[in-house]
Image 1 (cartoon, protein in one colour):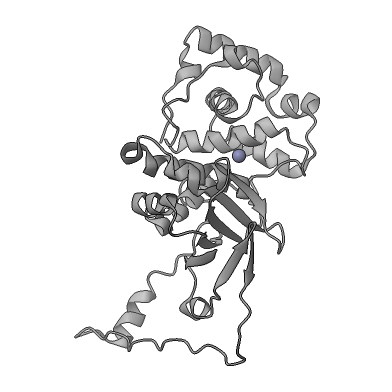
Image 2 (cartoon, rainbow, N blue to C red):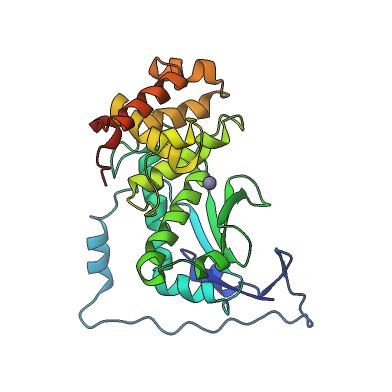
Length: 304
Ligand SMILES: [Zn+2]
């Protein structure tokens, strides 16, 4: 299977030397060249020189725009392993690929680490994530995130082309669903997990809480604690519970949960009383009661 790579945020010098790859059972390998002659890149066209533009004037202007970015920007890449797949068409037609990934990274950083949209919360410490590669390929399921073969600071998000092709109704849902799944998976690229000891339900709940806060929740999500029964039911069930905690204990509660998962191994008996002064089972009961009686702290409108 031929693999095409579209590169986001890479200097042209890196793009030029991108090799053609093949994929067999998910493992991409460079194709061996039949000759020893190195490939010659197509020369760049001469730069445009608009009338009236001059070097010194541009340099003068750039002196005023030297604010550093608030969060570290990871290297972002996308790899579409089958451009002939219907899901590739849907993906490229529904989103501006560079914008949707960059915006999702910004949202994840802001909700997990930000005091506001521009500045990090000094109480938090962001993960050392250096790059994220989104890989679109034909596979079962929806998506998953993993560390790359290089090391854990380089993340790969595998996103199913089959799933993307099946989003319905396509016209109304594709853009939001793609952004929502990418946002969820990007949380996994940036969240702490108690050095591997955090319950899966909490890991998934935090990911969907960010998705919820970004107003990217699918139409079928709703608060239903009685039907699920556990605080760590995961996904949207835990996400709505975290949303309740955020309202009850104040803005930044989920950031504090995430930061605590950076500092220590997860021990449920100590974790929640240490952070919020209550056992998590008590908090869940309070939440279930608030939902049952439709109290505002349970059903408050999610802020954008
Ligand atoms: Zn997940």
